[in-house]
Image (cartoon, rainbow, N blue to C red; front, side):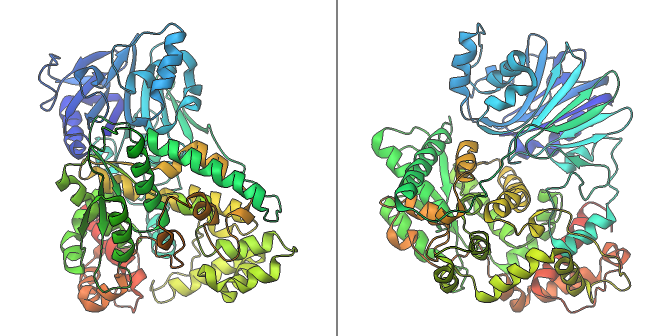
Length: 625
């Protein structure tokens, strides 16, 4: 929806204007500034002309800033920073249930000037204080100036869909939607965290950590609030929401299953309905899998019942395809598109284009990312921008809540042992794209996880670094959680999914697109995590909860397809076709990799070589080379 930023401490107008321009891609429609703690509004060169605020200039004791992507209430009444009764907010995201919250607040005596969700959010804080977030169904990152308590209250949504980066020392507190914007604050340096860089090469992205690749920048974690006291300089963060997944042993029962399937589809349908609320056009990112297809079909069903203004006469879908490569899912995309009568738009990413965009991608994402799938998503979002659509619906989260990953099957079998289905499910491992070898490794890793992590580290780091023998641990829980499928899935949501959501945010906002995620409606997640694992994987079928929930909605060929690809690219083939030579030449000239003691002339797998070239590009773009 937008880009937000702010600083509490001495700053100046030129610095703030530069930060605003850095974030313009997140909000090209409007610009605003407000001094803090002495509240006064200012305009910049991109502020809507009808707003007659004085131009921002000179030195300030602090300020909030904002870039707007207009989605709901396109009028100037929803201009930010927004002030009400002396409180000031900058807000990035959407509160999908804002209409019902507004009705509740009106019943408590509050009045409203605008028709959007920003004023509802601010009024909710005025009414309920820090517990306002308990009322929100949506995605958000926001900061509020509270003049009575003389604090800045900030919050990030339950799943980390929207970013919140910050800097804090004894005198200053600064925040922004992206690291590159924070780097423009004069007090923030671009010093890299070298251990984090090495950890990335071994383990991949780690957006579940407070620490960033930039040493002085931290991220507010999902489901966390932040309170900064202006007078004392004290900063604290705390978790406001969590889930305790169902870990009970269970045997599948069809009657009970029917209740789960009906409830899952009911909540999901409402989650899609809420995410169609928009004053601009909405489309869907379609990969051809169950999760994205379920959104397209559900939108079609909603359109049959009533007009959906944000969709219009025809639903748009956006896909990446690859011709004859295994990664291509055109077959499934075309089945869905034909049956739902959508306007299906496709893009064909390729390795030569990837090479030409390498440094542009590094700039967009602020930190290195794990695979070329991120590049493919970037191309899809470019396609969305060219189509005139401003909001997309996306299927992220469906695998985690419904049991979609092959690893989940051996975990489900182990956690329910012994029961009457044990041997039959063992036989079904291959059917679920799993294997008996993975089952045995799961048993071993469950009991000797630390040994397994160290062995993996040794295998990956051998030949990567010239001299280091230092063990760098993974740092999270996900790769150590083998006790229960639901617990592993929840850990994956807190770690692996956060990485995917980060790349989705940067890719979409790079083209001024807002991405929404129906599977991450907190009501659906809470319900799905209460469902025993025996209903998520059954008779060798992963994602059984989703498959049965969408019977009669999704084409059976798509619903019961056995291959799981997960938005891949033909990355290995691309490296063999020439990208490997480009990458090796690129990393051989990287001073940063040499400083990390990387053996830049080593022999690397395509996955590790991608991380190396991606890290080298990041270091060059942010002037560390």
